[in-house]
Length: 127
Image (cartoon, rainbow, N blue to C red; front, side, top):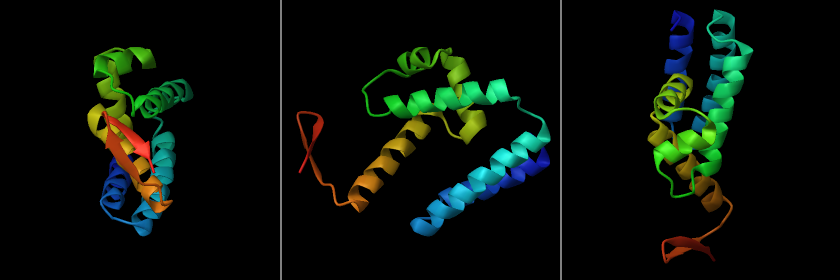
Protein backbone atom coordinates (compact mmCIF):
# COMPACT_ATOMS: atom_id res chain seq x y z
CA UNK A 1 0.00 0.00 0.00
CA UNK A 2 1.49 3.38 -0.94
CA UNK A 3 2.62 5.52 1.99
CA UNK A 4 0.08 8.33 1.38
CA UNK A 5 -2.80 5.85 1.21
CA UNK A 6 -1.65 4.23 4.45
CA UNK A 7 -1.44 7.63 6.18
CA UNK A 8 -4.95 8.65 5.12
CA UNK A 9 -6.26 5.22 6.08
CA UNK A 10 -4.84 5.75 9.57
CA UNK A 11 -6.75 9.06 9.72
CA UNK A 12 -9.94 7.25 8.71
CA UNK A 13 -9.39 4.60 11.36
CA UNK A 14 -8.95 7.30 14.02
CA UNK A 15 -12.07 9.13 12.83
CA UNK A 16 -14.12 5.96 13.04
CA UNK A 17 -13.07 5.63 16.67
CA UNK A 18 -14.55 9.05 17.46
CA UNK A 19 -18.13 8.88 18.71
CA UNK A 20 -20.83 11.28 17.62
CA UNK A 21 -21.44 13.75 14.84
CA UNK A 22 -17.85 14.98 14.80
CA UNK A 23 -16.58 11.44 14.28
CA UNK A 24 -19.09 10.86 11.49
CA UNK A 25 -18.05 14.03 9.67
CA UNK A 26 -14.34 13.32 10.14
CA UNK A 27 -14.86 9.77 8.85
CA UNK A 28 -16.72 11.07 5.81
CA UNK A 29 -13.96 13.55 4.99
CA UNK A 30 -11.25 10.93 5.58
CA UNK A 31 -13.09 8.47 3.32
CA UNK A 32 -13.09 10.99 0.48
CA UNK A 33 -9.40 11.77 1.07
CA UNK A 34 -8.64 8.05 1.12
CA UNK A 35 -10.38 7.53 -2.22
CA UNK A 36 -8.46 10.43 -3.75
CA UNK A 37 -5.15 9.17 -2.38
CA UNK A 38 -5.92 5.68 -3.59
CA UNK A 39 -6.76 6.90 -7.10
CA UNK A 40 -3.70 9.16 -7.21
CA UNK A 41 -1.49 6.22 -6.26
CA UNK A 42 -2.54 4.34 -9.39
CA UNK A 43 -3.15 1.21 -7.34
CA UNK A 44 -6.71 0.66 -8.49
CA UNK A 45 -8.35 0.96 -11.84
CA UNK A 46 -11.98 1.92 -12.37
CA UNK A 47 -13.12 -1.65 -13.07
CA UNK A 48 -11.61 -3.00 -9.87
CA UNK A 49 -13.05 -0.17 -7.80
CA UNK A 50 -16.45 -0.69 -9.41
CA UNK A 51 -16.41 -4.37 -8.52
CA UNK A 52 -15.25 -3.63 -5.00
CA UNK A 53 -18.02 -1.05 -4.53
CA UNK A 54 -20.53 -3.59 -5.79
CA UNK A 55 -19.27 -6.20 -3.32
CA UNK A 56 -19.55 -3.72 -0.42
CA UNK A 57 -23.01 -2.67 -1.59
CA UNK A 58 -24.09 -6.31 -1.65
CA UNK A 59 -22.79 -6.82 1.89
CA UNK A 60 -24.67 -3.72 3.06
CA UNK A 61 -27.89 -4.82 1.39
CA UNK A 62 -27.68 -8.28 2.97
CA UNK A 63 -26.38 -7.12 6.36
CA UNK A 64 -29.75 -7.56 8.06
CA UNK A 65 -30.47 -11.02 6.69
CA UNK A 66 -29.40 -14.17 8.51
CA UNK A 67 -26.94 -15.59 5.95
CA UNK A 68 -23.71 -17.52 6.00
CA UNK A 69 -20.70 -15.51 4.82
CA UNK A 70 -20.25 -17.94 1.91
CA UNK A 71 -23.80 -17.12 0.79
CA UNK A 72 -23.03 -13.41 0.98
CA UNK A 73 -19.93 -13.96 -1.16
CA UNK A 74 -22.00 -15.90 -3.69
CA UNK A 75 -24.59 -13.09 -3.76
CA UNK A 76 -21.74 -10.64 -4.48
CA UNK A 77 -20.41 -12.86 -7.27
CA UNK A 78 -17.06 -13.57 -5.65
CA UNK A 79 -15.46 -16.41 -3.74
CA UNK A 80 -15.27 -16.29 0.05
CA UNK A 81 -11.52 -15.63 -0.17
CA UNK A 82 -12.08 -12.79 -2.65
CA UNK A 83 -14.77 -11.35 -0.39
CA UNK A 84 -12.37 -11.30 2.55
CA UNK A 85 -9.61 -9.68 0.47
CA UNK A 86 -11.88 -7.06 -1.10
CA UNK A 87 -13.48 -6.03 2.18
CA UNK A 88 -10.15 -5.95 4.02
CA UNK A 89 -8.48 -3.92 1.24
CA UNK A 90 -11.43 -1.53 0.91
CA UNK A 91 -12.26 -0.98 4.57
CA UNK A 92 -9.52 -2.48 6.71
CA UNK A 93 -12.19 -4.66 8.33
CA UNK A 94 -13.15 -8.28 8.10
CA UNK A 95 -16.45 -8.94 6.30
CA UNK A 96 -18.12 -9.74 9.64
CA UNK A 97 -16.92 -6.50 11.23
CA UNK A 98 -18.06 -4.55 8.15
CA UNK A 99 -21.54 -6.11 8.47
CA UNK A 100 -21.64 -5.41 12.22
CA UNK A 101 -20.62 -1.80 11.56
CA UNK A 102 -23.43 -1.50 9.02
CA UNK A 103 -25.92 -2.84 11.56
CA UNK A 104 -24.67 -0.55 14.30
CA UNK A 105 -24.79 2.47 12.00
CA UNK A 106 -28.39 1.67 11.02
CA UNK A 107 -29.36 1.21 14.67
CA UNK A 108 -27.77 4.56 15.60
CA UNK A 109 -29.65 6.27 12.76
CA UNK A 110 -32.95 4.75 13.81
CA UNK A 111 -32.40 5.70 17.45
CA UNK A 112 -31.47 9.26 16.43
CA UNK A 113 -34.73 9.46 14.48
CA UNK A 114 -36.69 8.25 17.50
CA UNK A 115 -37.43 4.71 16.36
CA UNK A 116 -37.69 2.10 19.07
CA UNK A 117 -37.86 -1.64 18.50
CA UNK A 118 -38.67 -4.61 20.66
CA UNK A 119 -37.45 -8.05 19.68
CA UNK A 120 -40.16 -10.63 19.22
CA UNK A 121 -39.51 -14.05 17.77
CA UNK A 122 -36.01 -13.09 16.62
CA UNK A 123 -37.27 -10.11 14.59
CA UNK A 124 -37.51 -6.41 15.43
CA UNK A 125 -41.01 -5.02 15.96
CA UNK A 126 -40.98 -1.26 15.48
CA UNK A 127 -42.92 0.66 18.11
